[in-house]
Amino acid sequence: MRTYEVFLKRPGKDEFRHAGSLQAVDSEMAKILARDSYCRRGEGDQMWLVDRTHIVEVDPDLLATTVDLPHRNNDGSAVAARRKRLREQAS
Amino acid sequence: MTHSWTNLDDFQTYIDGGGIVEPNDRMPEEFRSEVFRFIEFHANSELMGGLTERDWIPRAPGVRLKQIFLAKTQDEIGHAHLLYQVAADMGVKSRTEMLEDLFEGRSRFHNVFHYKAVTWADQIAIAYLVDAAAFASQRAVFAECTYGPYKRVLKRIVAEEGFHMRHGEEMLLRLTEGTDIQRTMFQEALDRWWWPAVQLFGPDSDPDDPLLRWKIKSQPNEQLRHAYIQKYVPLLQSYGFTIPDPNLHFDESADDGKGAWVTSEIDWEPLIATMRQGGPDSRRRISNAAANYADTAWVRAALEATAVPA
Figure (cartoon, rainbow over the protein chains, first blue to last red):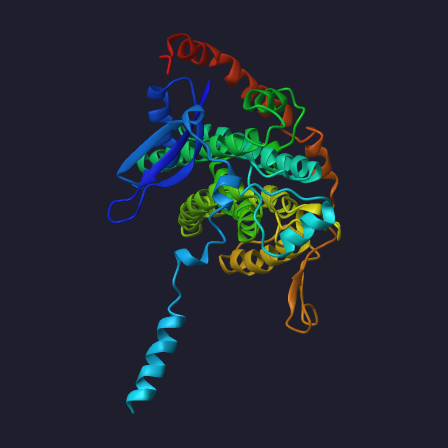
């Protein structure tokens, strides 16, 4: 028995979303079960099934290194301050 | 990120701050085992409920109702699939172990699936009154539900139960507007199912119920039961049916002067009996489910044998 992760995409601009998981003996059976469990009333028009053992999981510590990097963002406050100063100088 | 907590107080602070627990988190063992038990109970109930519903497909009057019962049965079995998967991913028991425990009578499921449905009206009482009780308690779990995978499958389950309820109500209204024989049939079914439906919510919650503390449940049993009674007593009476409770009365002073329907003291013995597989129809239902599982073993074996390697 294998475990599959089910991803479903609704028609339109939405991205594929994780819908859940299921167990099946192989991918052919998984397709039928996935339709019957996750797409019973037109919940999507595209579906991906991924064998759980094929998922490459990234260590959370690797992702944590990107949390505190303020120079990768710009909240606009420095721009606003400069604009304000220039406006005041002009008037 | 993967969460871990040093102790239960630390965990509680996380929960109180709106935290959600995911399968990879190092959750406290108490949380894992309590939540697992709760989800396993829910999964078992969906499966046993689906099997009950299936019995009525050939007996449902007319093609449209047969289609509806077929679809509902598929939905319920589908819910069981989703819930067994979420439960299995908690790493306490495999799906096969859960099914074997259920069929051996070692695990529990909702009290209402321990009773016999006698007539078509019983099935309507189940599809409307009993499903309404189950739906109310599921919605109360969905409202908070700090275990992420459970919350996500509940979203789907609650949506489907919503229109099951409408099917139930439509069927009830058909009987209500029907002949005297049909109305009598429903009254008799109501006499059989009123108390099991009320008891489904369980006795008053322990004030320190860990499932409330960890926000798996959002409301104590007694609140849900009270709300259910307030909704369904006047509704059923307005259709001309009698609630089988001689002491039922409207107390003007209850609920801080707003007034509320008050029932007799609830006898919990029937509920306790079902928890020990000692309900009126427990043995037959469990052995039928077990026989069904045994009869379909060849299908699972055939699928395994012909599986295409990944």
